[in-house]
Image (cartoon, rainbow, N blue to C red):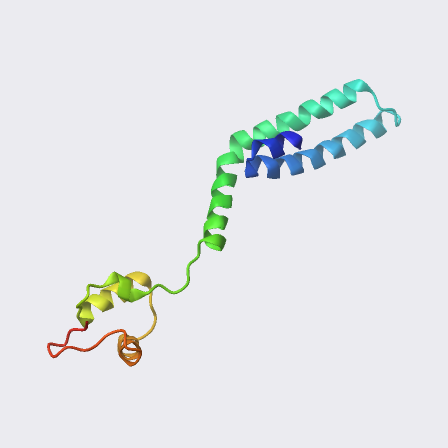
Length: 133
């Protein structure tokens, strides 16, 4: 476990916890099978098996585990609130432009309600040529 902590590698640390638990179980089975006598070969075998177990897990599942951890971090830590759609349109825009922006960002609010709220809050004004500024 010390190596896992020094490695600063989350997948390795996660696999190390599991590997040590499995190694402990193997050690107990061998200890009981050996008449409840602890011997150096048992210790050496368990140490080797834990290292081999970690090597196999990192070799076959390390990248997938890292991708899953990264995806979780992005979902939890980097999720932003509602986007300010005004940042994605030009200073002067028409309904078609804001409708495209709403579609891209998956906004479910009706366009008329959105524009009405922006006008009430003083974010935009309607121009004579049916554009907004």
